[in-house]
Length: 312
Ligand code: CP
Ligand code: NVA
Image 1: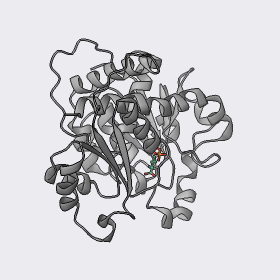
Image 2: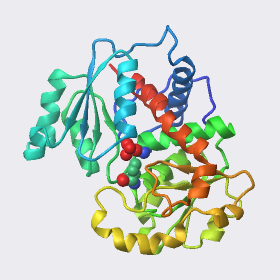
Image 3: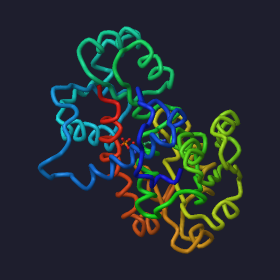
């Protein structure tokens, strides 16, 4: 699957988006096809309104700028209404079960976007409820981010098959996990350059099953790379480990010296938020800001495509 296919007759009907692992090649291609249409048609009169009369809830248990705003704007542009529910404000924050919350909300609303800690929470919600569930980031995965990243790469490089992407830094985080699956589904070669304690778990590498290389050697990883990717060193929920993480991950910074070892014209990507001077230097961030903010913009188009495919 090279992500460029425009001729999808019968993609499997998605019920939820909980992980990149469960997506088929045709589903990814269909998401990209619709995202392209939404991007091209944004602001024009005849926009699809598949959510007309629908209300979708955003249940967030962690902070967010891009995900929250792009989902709220996207739902509105698709003709629906959104309801932002911080877990501090609903009974789930006081111990009501995920399953009961899912059963109740399924009587009122048409879909739910969840950002939380445990992957099992989004799975339980999907199991107990009767509405589509979108994973908007858990400790394990960030599927919407990786789909937007892959879409951005297709826009910039046309085909994904055989391209080498290297993830630097916290290789045991949600973004890297979803990248392992995303690279495998699109026939990309993925390298993870990380210190031993921040390398992807063996079970993730096995489950993803693609062309995956894990190393502590940043030069070897960067060699001949088409894409250098990084994420924050201190993910949400890991704040207590901040001091150690900043020290241990310092050699994995994306900087000018690293770029010199990659392919000329290498793309630098970052899911944001960025911590300048930590995982990426100011000069590299500045020079590659077009790609990085295209990634952020594409969250909107790609998520509108995902919702459209999930909406009943
Ligand atoms: N990249 C991303 O998910 O950003 P937010 O945490 O701001 O949503
Ligand atoms: N790995 C980061 C991603 C932020 C979008 C986190 O979980 O905080």
